[in-house]
Amino acid sequence: MKKRFLTKSTLLVCYLLVFALMLAACSTGNGSNAEQGKEEGSSDAAKTKIAYWTIDRHDMDYMQQQVDTYNATNQDNIEVEMKVMADNYNQAVEVAFASNQAPDIFRSGDFQNYVNKGYYAQLDTLLSKEFLAKFDGLLVEDIYTKDGHVYTLPNTGQFWRLLYNVDLLEKAGFTEPPKTLDEMVEYAKKITEQGKSEGVYGFASNFKNGSGFTRPAYASGSLGSETSHEGFNFQTGEFDFGMYRDVTEALRQIKVDGSMIPGAESLDIDPLRAQFAQGKIGMYVNHSSEPAVYTSQFPTDIRWASTLVPTKDGEMNGVTWVNAGGYIGISAKSDKQEAAVKFLEYLYDTELRSEYQEKGLGLSVLPYVNEVAGKPELAGIDGFLPTKYDGIYPATPVSITETKLEGKKFSDVFIEYILTGNQELDTVIEDLNTRYGKALASARTEGLTNIQANPSFSAKNLQGSLGE
Image 1 (cartoon, rainbow, N blue to C red):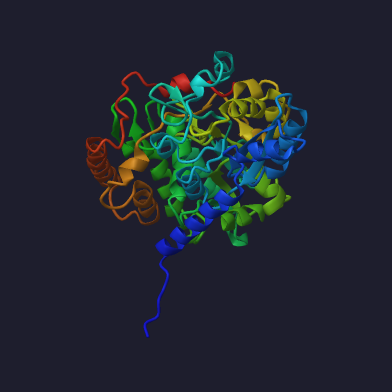
Image 2: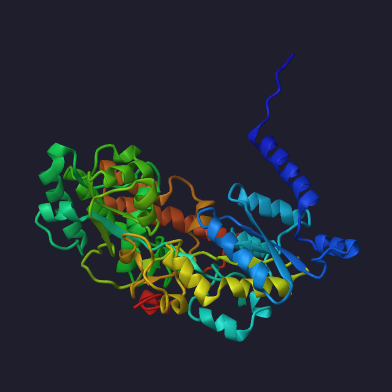
C-alpha cells in the first residue's frame, strides 16, 4: 500500500479552509453581531461593532489598552475588537475577503495586491481634507497612494544608522564616528589591529542573506545619491547599480584588510548582535529596532552610539531611506466605514502617537508628532530620531523586476564580490544593469509596473521632510 504525503500546498489549502470556517463562525466584521444584539435586547444593542486586525505583536498590550479606552470613552457607540494575527497575515486577509468576512479596518500589508484586488477603500473619499493635510508631502505613489487616490497612511518607520562601539573607537584613537567610506575602512582596520588578539574586529554584516549587503548599501547609497534608490535611477527610469560602487568597494576593502569579523558569510543578524553586545564588533549598520534589542534581547553594558551612515565623500546629496510602509486601511467591503473612519482618526491622535513614540514602541515619520513628542524611554534611541537627512522614497520597481530576472539578484552578486573579489566590479555592475534592464522591460510590457522616468526627481527635495 502506497504511503500518502501532504504537500506544503495541500497543507496551506487545508489551513486556509479551516481559517475560513473559523471566520464564518466567529467574525465580528460583517455586522451580524450588532443585529443579533438588537434582537436579543442586550445592553449594547445600539453599538456599532467593528473588527480591527493587526500584524504587530510588539505593541499589542499598549494598543489593546488604547482600544479599551476608545471603547469606554467614544461618544459614537462604537465598539472595536482588535485581533493580532502575526502569522500568515496576508493569507488570512486573502481568505477573509474571499469569504466576505473581512475586518472593517486592518493593518496594511501587500499594498499593490490589496489595491489591485479592491480590498482598500479610498481614504480620500472618506477622510476630511483637514485630516489629510496632516500628511502633506508624505503620501508617495505606490506606497500610500495609487492613481491619485489615498489607500493607507504612514505612521512609523525604520531609520537606518551606523552603530559603533564608543570604547573601541576611542581605544583606536578616534573621537568621533566616520563620515566617509574611506574613514570607515580606516576605522575598521585600526580597531581590528588594536583588538584582534582578543577577538575584536572592526566591522560586521550578516552576509548569510542579501540584507548583509542591502543594510549598509541602501543607507549609504541613497544618502549619497541625488537620483537613485534600490539601484533604480528615478530620473532615467532605468536600473543603474553604479550607485553602490563606492560602498561595495569599501566593504570589499574591509574584507581584504582582515577587518571583517570571521564567518561573515554565514552570519545572521542575531549572532551579530550578540557579538556586538559582547564588545567584539566595532561597527555595523542596522535600523531603529536595535535600542530595544540591546535593552531586552541582548542586554549590554558596552558604550555604544549611532550615526548617519558614511557616504563616499561625506556629502549628503539625498536622504537615508526610511522603511515606512502603510499603517492601516479601511475595507472597501465594510458597511461600517463611517465608524472605521472615526477609529482611524483616533489612532492618529497626536497624544496617542506621541506617547507611542515616547514609550519606545516605534519612531514616527509624522512631523506633527515629532514636533511635540518627548524623548523616548529607550536607551540608545537618540541617534535614530528623524533628521533632515531621512526620507521616504517613492516606490521602485525592483521587486516586480526580480520576478522576471534571469540569474542572481544584485544583493547576492555584490556579496559574492565583497567576499571573494572574483571578478572586476565594473563587469559586475554592467551585467546587473543589463539583466535588470531586460527584466524591467519585460515587466513593463506585461503591464506589471507603471513606474516610469521622472526627469525632475531630486532626492534633495526630500531633505527636511521628516525632521530638522
